[in-house]
Amino acid sequence: DIVMTQSPLSLPVTPGEPASISCRSSQSLLHSNGHKYLDWFMQRPGQSPQLLIYLGSHRASGVADRFSGSGSGTDFTLKISRVEAEDVGVYYCMHSLQLPHTFGQGTRLEI
Amino acid sequence: QVQLQESGPGLVKPSQTLSLTCTVSGGSISGGSYYWSWIRQPAGKALEWIGRINTSGTTDYSPSLQGRVSISVDTSKNQFSLKLNSVTAADTAVYYCARWVFDIWYFDLWGRGTLVTVSS
Image 1 (cartoon, rainbow over the protein chains, first blue to last red):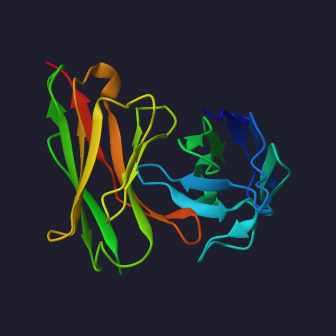
Image 2 (image 1 turned 90 degrees about the vertical axis):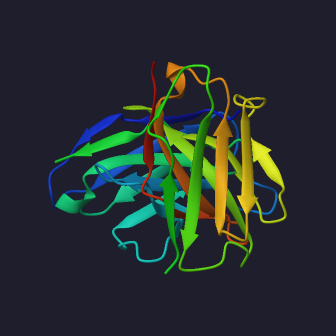
Image 3 (image 1 turned 45 degrees about the horizontal axis):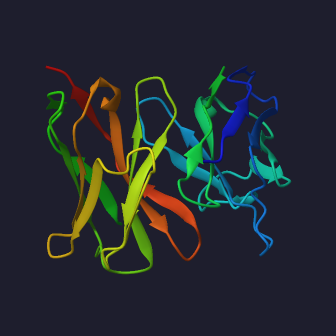
């Protein structure tokens, strides 16, 4: 299985300031078709995960443009340009290159 | 608007079978190119992909659960189901059903999740 490692595991932030979360995979998620098979989810307290970014850098429908994703084959980053109070929660990366899909440990964003 | 809702017993005894159903409402389970999936999350831990099924009945399972897990679909009821045999305390988790969009390659819908506790 591909191992997904996130850092930091906890991220204190100040509203209005930027935030960045890293995700590293144990093997390249760059397919020969050019797609990077890495997604980002946000899970608010008591809720189910919500897709933010798919295929490395594509923002999901309805997601605020302050969220952006980038990365190479094994190193990926989720950036929030200006954190808002509603962004509090746990953020997970997940690969979809092959089965089984595996998730990172999660990064808790705290204000 | 399509929604997913998990249902099933919240308490299962060790060595018994965990059974959950996900009901799809607001749309047909047979429409579109989807894989209907199960994912779980032990308290305070990361998400774990369990397996998936399409409406043709093709299934894929996590190797770590292979042999204990079974997923089925009932298109007449707009439902798909999870069975996990020989459960232990390690199977205690919130279980989510989710929809995988095959054409675009992502999870676009999740149920609210249901807590299943394995305890005698």
